[in-house]
Structures are given as structure tokens and as C-alpha cells.
Length: 194
Image 1 (cartoon, one colour):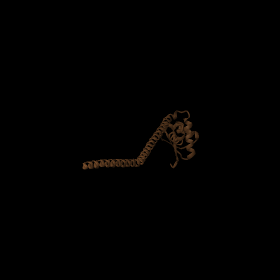
Image 2 (cartoon, helix red, strand yellow):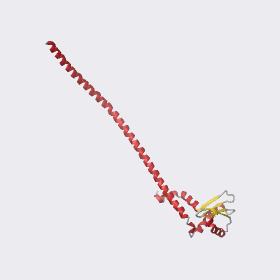
Image 3 (cartoon, one colour):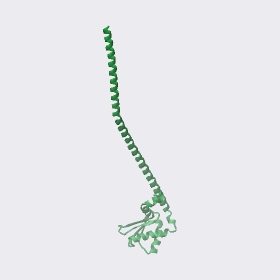
Image 4 (cartoon, rainbow, N blue to C red):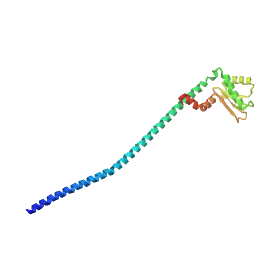
């Protein structure tokens, strides 16, 4: 019976030893898990910060692109309105000959050309519809010059020096085109309150 007791004692001792090893293994495993979790937290935190930063960068990039696209569309719309205003002005020029002051306007445009070119050998290019009126104005002003009716215009004239080196573009369209660029900021201000 001593052997049975010995076997039982060995089994009990073995069970105790197994429990002790299991508890120590569990404690070591818990410690390893705890260490891993402690080491894992900074990694998780770093990864979370990197992800947050990446999302913020992407968000800012998208917002910037949307703002720029919106700004460009707004500028495009303002330019389209600006162009429509001038298209309407050009259409209104077509009736300028019917205006009671058209003779004075044409005379003023002629005076500007003469001031720049003088009266010596000037060649005037005008619209055929202005020929009779233009001749009357030249006679009134006692100015001579060659008249060529090769212009299609809402009114006004182009004046060339005899040698062709100097040209004064003084049609209503050319004046409107100059005004369009010179007064662009003021017109934008009136149209859009800028």
C-alpha cells in the first residue's frame, strides 16, 4: 500500500505542481498581455493621430479645391455678365446715327484725329452711310482730306497719315472697346459692388 500512497502523493504533488505551473504561466501570460497592451497603446495612439492628421489634410485639400472651383465659377459668371453688358452696348451703337447729336459726335471724333495727325494729307476711312454728313463736317471745318468709304461701323472714323505710319482708330466700336478695358474695374464695381 505504500506504493499506492506514494503514487497518490506523487499525483497530488504533480497536480499541485501543474496548478502552480498553470498559475505562473497565467500570470506570465497576463504580464505579457499587459506589456503588449501597454506597448500597443502608444502605437494605436500614433496610428490614430496619423490617421486624424491625414483625414484633416485631405479635408483641407478638398475644401481648398471646392473653394477655388467656386471662386473660378463666380469669376466666370461675373465676366459673362460683363461681356453681356458690352454686347448690349454694341447693339445699342447700331442706332447711334439716329441720335440727334450724332453730327456733333462725329465732328468730335474727327477733331481728335486731326489733333493727333494734323490736317496735311490725312486719309479718312468712314462708313458709306456717313459720307454726306462727313463731307458737310469737313466743309464746315474747312478741312480737306481723302475720304474712303470702306468701313463698316456704327459710326466714327479711322484716320491715317498719308504715309500710313500713323493711324487713329476712332470708330464708336473702337472707343467702346478701349473704354471696356480702361473702365473695367469701375464697371465691375457698379455691377457687383466691388
